[in-house]
Image (cartoon, rainbow, N blue to C red; front, side, top):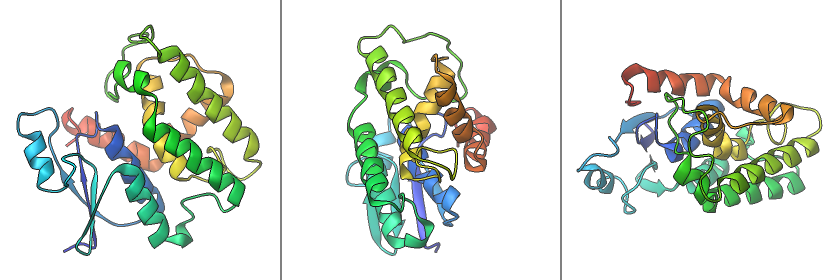
Length: 213
């Protein structure tokens, strides 16, 4: 049996599944995937076979079950400190955790009106939804602030790739799907995420069946 098993939903739609998957792939942590078909009558029952929350993603490791994207990422950061999944600088690490928690708990308008659909292209759709403009502005503010503080060392929010980037990666796909207007700095960041080898691999998974399995 593999040491790590990650249970995920459809790659085209499951933004929460993308987050820990991207962390593990980018960090080179080997794992097996188990897929649950979303948006089906039996989806919740399938999920409950893996997680008490009835939701994906779920990480299984040596008899332990960890659910919730951010909890999985934190667990991996503790198991693999050498992977530096959070910024090394304490202040940057605190900010990275803050913006990750903000994404985890907020941006409901963005989630509702601009759902993740990597294969789709719907320019302008949903952008007039209540609260969407404010969410978009806040995301871009976060990106600009983080990257302004990062100094040299990489194109991501805090230089090198971190859990914070995994938390915002699904937003990058949303901005591309719905053609959200972005300034040059934000576009540069989006390109860095979009062109990661792990993100390319995830997109191949989407394209393979149209449903990401």
